[in-house]
Length: 293
Image (cartoon, rainbow, N blue to C red):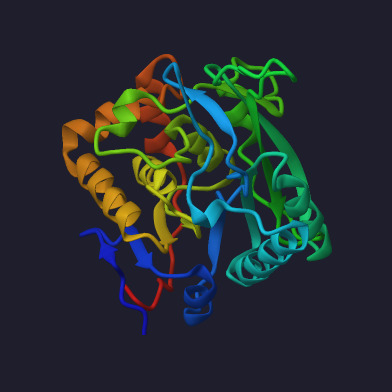
């Protein structure tokens, strides 16, 4: 039986330590939504600019590429496992860049997922291109797909339209990178902003939904999920980042921090609208919870 690395008092934030390929086959539970930020395989000894200084692009050995076939097989393996842990009407969001996103798109089609959108996240503060040999990289892509071609999925269309000032929300999102208050306890090298995960979660889940992040890192997915009344399980091989995740979770267990963070998500210009929205949301009630709770 799986033993959680960490379990919150409310049992809404669960961390599992280990390899996703070994952990996922061990439990029988299906999720409403998956967010995956898998290795981009871009650690190629190149250079970039960070905080005005030239630094290496290398993230760690887990981000080193071993060739096209290796990347394809890695993506095929984890996506097969994830598919088996999704409800029939569940959706998955997968972030990437040109280094891995084409492989992921190909494998999704191969495994009979239906790609719904390819979101372009345009960063408001990208690092400059100091080589002057190509355009500045300022975006990441996020593929949104559902498990099955013929089974419908939940999309909170009206809310997304309301957030976008009464107009249909497009597939290009202008959002900043992580803010200083999101790094109070430290930072993961590929950490995503809470505003990005909050939009994804509100777009595709209902209150009480179970969300899985198989490459959880510092668990931005879980923090956003809990701030919005959802439940979370995250998996990671690195204890360092799981410990950072625990610190972040404990930070929002303080009532004042919880509401401050939710205010900082800036879902609406008027924070009272956010509180009203979350209060009125319909809730999913589960007869079955993960067996290791």
